[in-house]
Length: 208
Image (cartoon, rainbow, N blue to C red; front, side, top):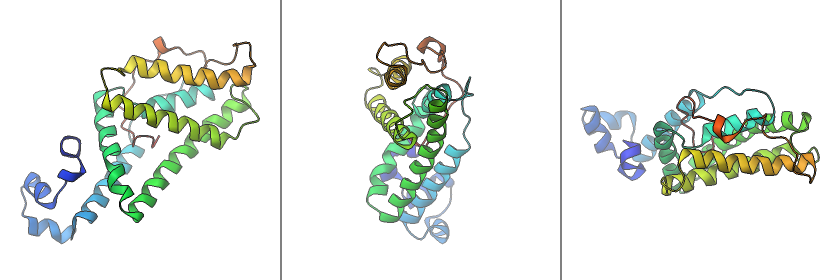
């Protein structure tokens, strides 16, 4: 329902109709739309945490790349999940409590990315003088921006282009660790051609 109608369409009446129940019965569990929205976001968060993920071929930069691939809308299921999460931003921004919960979700995702960034620094694949937390934040920001563009213009940002753009971004960051000769790390030796989409990965856009 959320993928088709968005959060504006998530009403007590619509949910009751979809469940074949009365609105009165539903309000016993959800006294208002806000509680219904909060429940929907919690369910989405749990699904995102437990979703299938790609297996990284190696630790460090390759693992960071794999985690970022899991964020992108490379498959139909991932695109649908990302539409829901991007649609939830407006709802969360309008409610301080929901905004805090959303911020916590993205913070947890950044912390997971930070572990990969730190390992990449230890392997000499990312600049050692940079903050791993900042690198993770930049990586998450890049992925989220690419998610939004791919959702609005899927024909302009097909999966293969998303992967190519991600690899180019990672290569640019990696070159800083390898010097100015352009011989920096290459995300564990992976190339765009080796990045065929894996299992459906439904992220909270950027929930990692």
